[in-house]
Amino acid sequence: MIGHGGGIPGFQSQVTYYPEHDLSVIVLINTIGPPGPGAIAGAIADLILGDQAEPPNRTYSGDAEALAGTYRGPGRGRESVVTIGIDENGLTAAAGNSEPSPLTYLEGLTFGGNSTRFTFVMVEGEVDRLLVDQISGLLVLKRDDR
Image 1 (tube, rainbow, N blue to C red):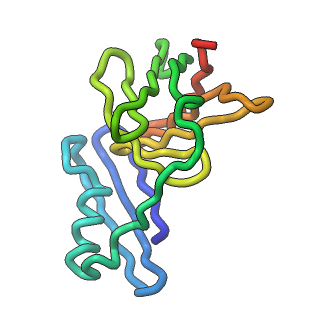
Image 2 (cartoon, rainbow, N blue to C red):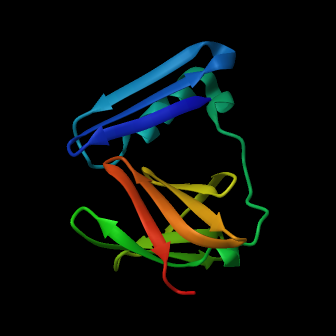
């Protein structure tokens, strides 16, 4: 599948295309509460395609410990802090003082969680930054625990 979500505060969208089935699912909503447009689009595709709509099960084979840490940087007029941790199921992310949420491995050094993508950036063999791609913008956070 090929897809992309986006939005601005109060309005969200998800466009997903399944090339093998020539199926497009487009969801436009004007609420920020759950379920999000990605979950709704997935449910619609599941109704139409059944199990074929499920993305492949991917597992991160790299060193998760190298990704765990605290990342800080400017975001929306104030400092943003994201802590990447590890639990029995894999990587987690916690913004500020929130509870950690599980991350799903997508590809390379990119993970997904709710409506956010987390991409780790390596510099000279070490994780240096974290790109947090949210519906409402992109945060570039510097690792501060090394």
